[in-house]
Structures are given as C-alpha cells and as structure tokens.
Image (tube, rainbow, N blue to C red):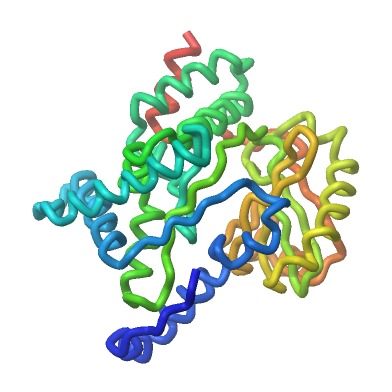
Length: 331
C-alpha cells in the first residue's frame, strides 16, 4: 500500500506519545503487506483490502458493543446508522473477495493479527459442535483431548462470507486492541483486512522459527502445549528441511530480525506469517525470560525443540466450557 502523508494533528499526537507510537510502528513493520510481495510463491494466496479510518472506527465500535456486553459495562448505542452502512459496505467487499478469489473459503485477519481468540470468547455453537466431533477421535487422554480442542478451534476460523468475517472480528480482543492502537494515531498507519486462502493444516506440522541478523537460530513446534508423537521420528528431517527452506527465503525477506511461522503441507513448506522479534511474540518452547534461551534465540547455535512428553496438566489451557464437554463425553 502507498505511504500517505501523516496529518499534522497526528504528528502532535506522536510527539506526545513517542513510546506508544514507536512500539506500534514496530508491530506494523511486520504487517503482511511488508513482506508478502517478496515471498508470494512461498506463502498462501492473499488479497489485501485497505481499510479507511471511517471503516476502522465503525469496526471498533462494533467490537466495543460486544466487549461492553460481556463486561457488564453500560453500552451506548454505538451502532449508528452511519456505522451500519459502513459495515455493510465492508461486508460486501469481503464477500466479493471470498467469492471471486478464494472459492468461498478463506482465513481473515488484520494487517497485524488474526482473530484467533474469537472462537473461544464465550464458546459458541459452532465451536461446541466442532469440539464434540474432534473429541470422538480422541483416545480420552488429556493430551489427545487438548489436541482435539486445537483442531476444533482451527476449523472455526474458516470463513465463507463477509458476515462471518465481521463476526470473528467483533468477538476478538486481539482485533479490538489492534484497532484501538491504530486509531490512537489516525492516518499514521495503513490498516488492511487480509483475506487468505483456506488450507487445512496439521497442527503438529506448524513451527515457529527465530531469526536474528538473518540467521535462523531456533525452531519450536508451534502448538507447544500438545505432545505430537509423530514429531519424535521426524525431528531430524524436519530440522533439515526447514533449514534448507530458510536458505531459499532469507535473501528475499526485507526484515533482518523476525519470528516466522511455517507449515508443512503435503508437498511443500509455506510461510504463514512474520512476527515482531520481541518478547510479546510467544517463544513457544523457548522462554524469553531465561538467559540461555534468549542467548540461543539471538545467537544460536541452532536448536530445534519439540515436546518430548505430555505436560502435567494439559487441561489447564482449556476454557471451562470445553472442560464441561470433556467431562460429559467421559461418561
């Protein structure tokens, strides 16, 4: 997207909130628009829908209604007629993209983050049904039950319409936070809704890599609270393939320091996304608070970590509603 001149009023806001602005700018430095054109053939098909300030404000108001209704906060009628019209037009734009370019199935996010928290913010009927279906495949162990949860959660992120996309955004604290952060500095950042092709992914075959000074120093399984037995035998092969893949993509990526999420599909590896290189991005099986882990992440030598055995209390990561379903199915 084209860089736009920052309004004078926003420049004053930046001067008064330099730390917040610098932090927000760093996050936007890893927005998908900054790297997608360079590695298009190594990632998933993507369309970028620019979002105006008016659309961002309308979407934030939509999120605020949901947030207030779930926080016992007296809510003003934020969904004015103007907001409704703006959201309706935005929904139509998303619909057109999904229907025309993605065969009626997609994954949606903002430039910065996805609404992945939305499906577990008050478990809805779709999530309940998907979780029940996945639990039927579980052997009943806590580890397998939490894998069922991960699989169900992912399936609920599949979007087939603009209405479904806006509903996910509405229920997501991550989206609400990113909209608020963007609107703190109107016109300073180019925000977009990102439409991506929907691809079924094996949760055990997603990985997070830590790159510093263009060097891949560390790799972790992405779903780090679940133990995937298939990874034990494949660990060495995965490590080699990721390092080989990294040699192909590293010269193309403009950023020097970043955290990259990768997925193994049937015949190839794909980049899912790039994330800021800081402690707010999960270290997965590496701990930003541990000196040795931090040293590895920044300087190597290269290390690949998988969960060798199930954690002591896998159920600790599940919402209460999901625990109720597990108890129900255990009888």
